Image (cartoon, rainbow, N blue to C red; front, top):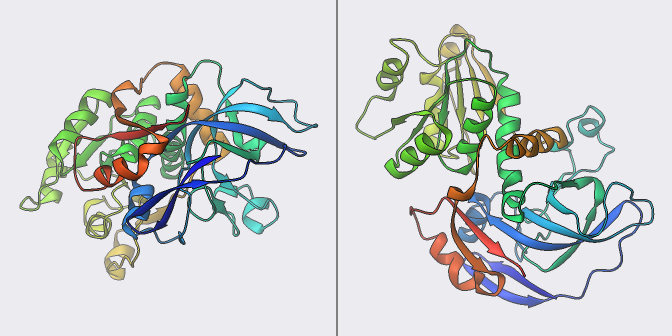
Length: 340
């Protein structure tokens, strides 16, 4: 069976794997048909992913087709198209028992902690496969990215009168914007990249702002709301300076949600944090409910994902193409790997 392995930072190679066995109880054998490439994969390629050890088969944004199911699985059948929820929880720790399997104490994420989906076939827990009769394989591969946005919005818990700022107009920021719009909110999306701002405006129908190094971001944001600061800031940049800067942007009594992450520390001035009674939240991965909400949003056709898919390649071409995708800022919104 064909696969692609990241042997070390910057070094991808083809790999021949043995075929997976037949699915056992609670399992399904799937053919991986699409693999989305995201920032996590590109950070891993550069050696900057904090949760990953090498060698590793990448791939956690997966559109799959069911080939066979275990003897007790009744929710799926061969031929079903599914999105994969790639967060494999233990089901036994305190977080899992309290309903927070997305941050399980022993969580294993496909393509990060354990080998992922840049391969032809894989056995997975059946309850981590989310079926849709309406979505294409391309769309199903992007459900995971959008689900992270759904979870971030749930963490922020915005109300109709909140002024919401999204920092970062990459795929995660776009997913956040889509779920905010689905709630009837009117967020502002800020990014340094003019092409990404333009895409966010046209695709999600949101207002956008430039965050340029020589501008005062606080002044820009207050202009966006006629003198008021945002009450909710969701940072999807994974940039240390941006994340540290959120504390000076948010209104008194406001909420900050860190969706992106980086390998390092974030510090803030404690007296100011207390004086303004800010709330700081992390958002990690997504729950089964977030995935189902994302599938429902896509099936409503409020948003289409065709414009996201700017780059494609075949599985065998990944070692040549992925270094180009990882080379720096480009017009790529989402790269997609096709596995026939």
